[in-house]
Length: 95
Image (tube, rainbow, N blue to C red):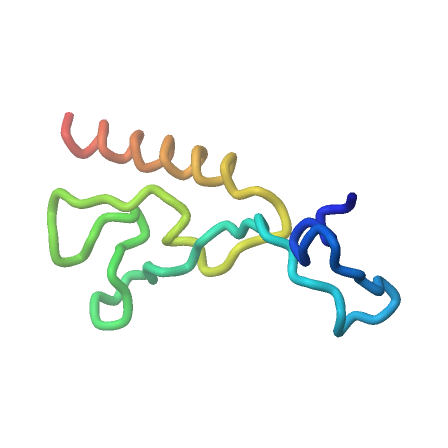
């Protein structure tokens, strides 16, 4: 039994040649990103270029929400690289 048939029901007939009869697959995932704008101007962004909140001196955002959009691949390595970059910034700032 295919995943499509399971979603539609065990005894349901699914015509895979007709897109309108195909049930949506459950379990699709998406990488959320792009919810916090960053930039130099506090009037048009929430974070500066170091991912620090303009309004709070001790808040940094290092997840994928600062991404302008999501790419075609998993963003984990890019998020990790940015977290390391921000960490280096914090070490310099607090030294």
